[in-house]
Amino acid sequence: MPSVRPARTLLAALALALASASAGMALPVVAIDAGHGGADSGAVGLIPPEVITGLEPRATDELQPALFEKDVNLDVAHRLNAWLMARGFPTIMTRSTDNAGGDVPYTDVGTDLRARTDLANGAPAEIFVSIHQNSAKTPASGTETYVKAGAPLPTQVLAATIQRTLVACLGLPDRGVRERSFFVVRETTMPAVLVEGGFLTSPTDVFLLAQPDFRQRIAEAIGGAVWSYAGLGDPGPICSGAVAAAPPPVPKTITVARAGRALTKKAGINPRRGDLWVAVVRDAAGKPMSSIPVKARMPNGKGVAITTRPDGKALLAVPRRRGKLKVAVAMPGIKVSATRRVPARVPARRR
Ligand SMILES: [Zn+2]
Picture 1 (cartoon, rainbow, N blue to C red):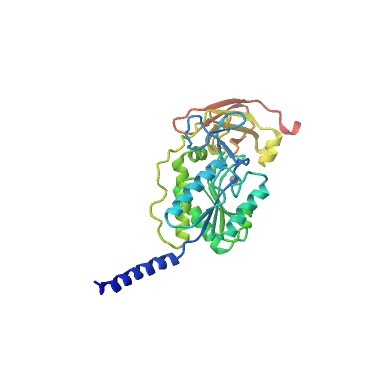
Picture 2 (tube, rainbow, N blue to C red; picture 1 turned 135 degrees about the vertical axis):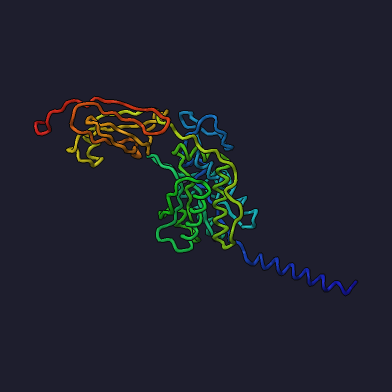
């Protein structure tokens, strides 16, 4: 019937108007920046041979199975891209293959980074997230988010939201939002953050980063945070996927030796209180272990409880008295101990 037509047209027009209204609430363009790529592997972590990463198999020069940061970053970037696109966010990826920024072969770091920021600025993107994994020479574990020094408030809000969601999803130590003017956060013209999910140099973190489900968690955490930052409210279920926790490393050996002069100086301990001795706790691979509780029984019978430092060393001020120094790991179910004879000493003033 002709009389129905206008009503139908009206409904159609209304539907269209509603659709454009929601489209008019335009979701921000998100630039996803997978750190490193091509000839630049980024940080390298060692993994047990039996671990299935779901990534390109990699090895070190010594042929040890390894996890390359560039591969982890790209995998997380693709997962984040899929998560955001499924929810209607326009996205750009500064690289989508194992190459430098702009998906061109890697030449040098300056060209690589400039290509990334040019892509984001040219789009123009409204949010920039650079995805990285960390490394350190001393034992370290956890999640960090970086903004440029003196970043404006929206950037700080974005960083705080991402860091909070990542920590909740990943369960790694919260190393906080930090200021450092990395090229990609400094040279971009929109709120920009650089995320360090975990440490490839940490046995705990690398065990997790090797798992596809854990990388999915990183992606969903960042996606959920972008969702909240965009003012869309609750992002719904994120941090899904079963992730196997790394088996805690077990202390295997403890060695005790009298400290050298250099260590005494560096440690900043007054050696006049007594001789300085050092206990080192190591795991099965011979790696020094930090934060291990240690109990010591001094030659005078006194007990001392301390914890190993980040370099795996526990410093003991031993009274100047001959006898036995007994040091043991104070963890339930683990028996590792060492005993050293403390020799008689010449009085200090006669040395
Ligand atoms: Zn990196």
